[in-house]
Length: 292
Image 1: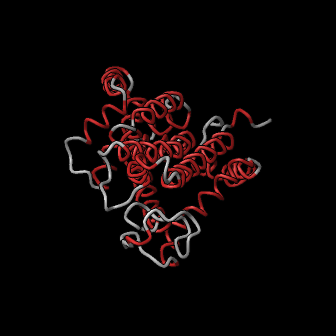
Image 2: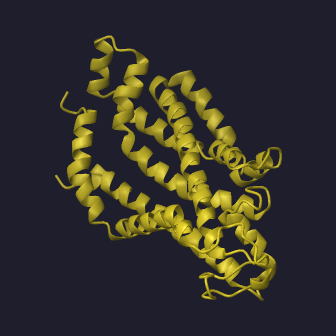
Image 3: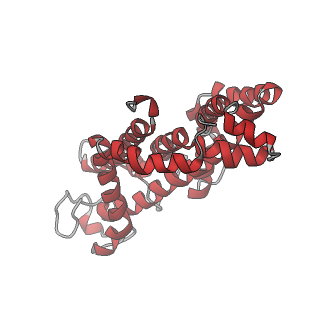
């Protein structure tokens, strides 16, 4: 039983050594700080602006940044870019977060069942995963988006349905390496059900790779939402998202470049921050790099 990694021990390890390793990762801390600031700005920022995201001032069309109360300028209809950017951030971040939750749930369930049972169950489920991976995810995403009502909820669902396969593979590989450990054999001898062993014993011990994959999935979901909205299949105006703000700016790149630069920089900050956090979590939870 000395090779077992029970959930309590795993939690204690995270609270001590893993936390210390994460706090020493400068890029991860920078990403976390940027993400917190961006989230706070999106949540509370609109309440401190003079205009909301739908207010139209035709006299202020194409105002450059730092013009009066329009801190980031205005768009072709005279709407305040700062207000639209922060409201779009709420939508884009929520889409990314909930798409991550749903895709992680789907991938984890399929991966843990395939890894635990092995044999024919593993073969069928992994071929199912391979079938989804055989289609380029962006084309699958666009195909689904073309046949549904492009609401934030539906965009979240279709992004999740095209993003769970990598998580399933990660979980399947991790569970296969854990299922023959002593604590799993002990659970079987005690008569614990397969469901209990999978979700109460194996899942907590596979949490590290799942957390890392989930963090990176948020960044991917934000990019996918921006991509399909930019192409016109995602969130539809007047509801703002970072993607459709880029879509509306493409014809004004020479005359009003800030319309594209500002949401582009914001997307870059959000995605890079999640990637930095994911790298930090991966290093913190990788016990193979821990001395001794």
